Image (cartoon, rainbow, N blue to C red; front, side):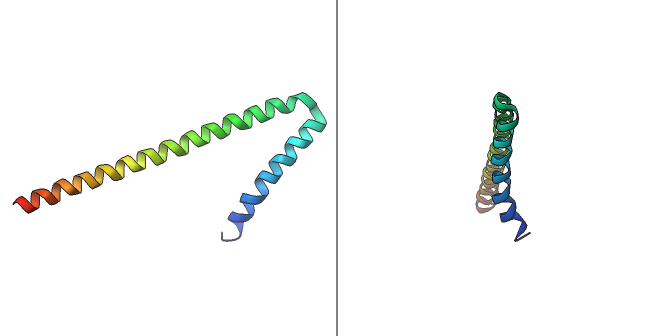
Length: 77
């Protein structure tokens, strides 16, 4: 995985750019639809990642507040 991950991060965008170029050569204007679809998928994926990170941060904050309340209660007892 040490080699595969960086390799995929480099070759995937190169492959996508190559595919867009070939789509333009083959079908011309239809490449607009392909780019629009890839953009839509990218936005959906970005929104999913943003939501997961936001919910994880909220959960972490909620747990920290709960621990602070428990620590405060144990100090008073």
